[in-house]
Length: 223
Image (cartoon, rainbow, N blue to C red; front, side, top):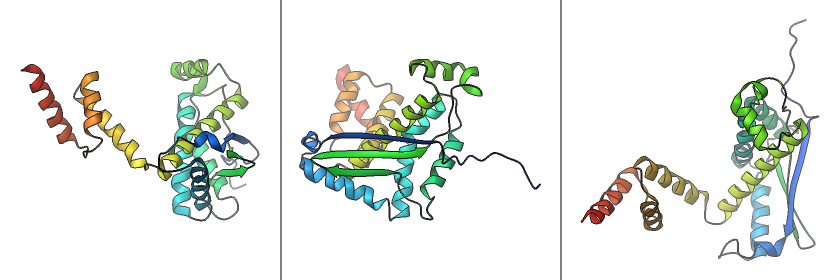
């Protein structure tokens, strides 16, 4: 015997989740694209993850952004989950995106198939008060239900990311979050935040520029 150890690769523990809606429901999702143009552009973006490892890596990372939030909050091992998921993405010898698009009969379907071996009993899930509280907020799911919740969070997060990439670009959302963090550092009030968001629609966000913007606002308010 060289060694005895369990593996974190659990391809028999598969979760499948999908969302389906009429194509027409995307009519107002972006001013530059019709509903039909949006779904077919979305499909092409996902197709790229099947042939390009660079895009597939970031695509799957977006899935785990959602999954990891649930895994961490409930006291499970996100490192084991990610290792297994990435291995599964390469199970056929080439690393690929884990989601799939189907467009049929006027309907758009987006699905995720991924192994998730997580639990609600043992480890930190019962010992850590925040993990216990998180499970309570989720309705005290059993292990199978928690797997479904985590997978759905991953699919939703990934859909949002791909949607941003093919429309306004993901950088817009990142910069808005960056602006919000800076405003919180300077303890901006609600009115200042609203004015800053409006101002930075057409200006580059930086720490110094936000500081100057808030200073000028506060000077005007004081006079």
